Image (cartoon, rainbow, N blue to C red):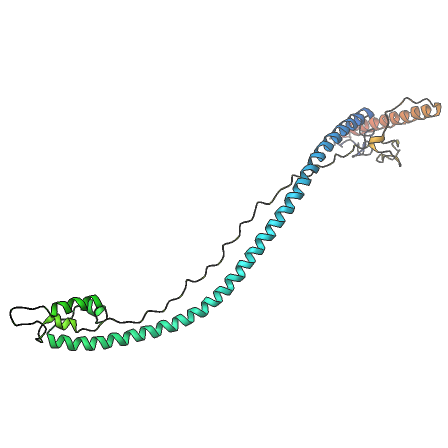
Length: 287
């Protein structure tokens, strides 16, 4: 002999999502929620007033911010345009400079070659050895160096003998070396630099707008049907703020209707309890 357990069938008698009365909550619970809702409305109105003041300040700050950003952006765009035009001009100047530099180097090289040939002949005549520094300078002497050698070349040594008259005097040989005379190298201005990225002011912020509270749903006034359907508020139910406090009924017909409704509810609960009992207590099957 065995038993099977079937869960109680309560769904048809207690539908989900029922309003205050069908969900075992009375009118007192609704009045408490309505009272809290009114308190929430007062708090919401205070927060909304503060928010509106902040919003007015934010709008003013935002207008100033947008104006500043537009001005900075316009100035940066102007600087960028000037930079691009200047860079294009510099590129042309650089091409000219490159050509001039190549020409200058060729001219200097020809001068050095001419100086080297002349200095080599003088060194051979006077028996001079040309140092590396002299060759690095372009096989030539500065004006100050030539003047110093010229001064030593005319110095008198002994009676009746003048230096410079003989061809073996080294100072006179150096005095005859070429004078350094090179053209000035070409120059170019510095390459233009791009303007720095602009720095914008901090964007103003606005706190979140307060959310209005939601009014509680008033109790349903439609009785439970025999089919166990959900109870819904009657059409034309007034808004929570306008719901009056409950008053005792004085109409005899209304009083009788209330007693009948309460009786129906008690009958429905009794039948539901009996069905639950019969479901749980099933007769034992024969072994």
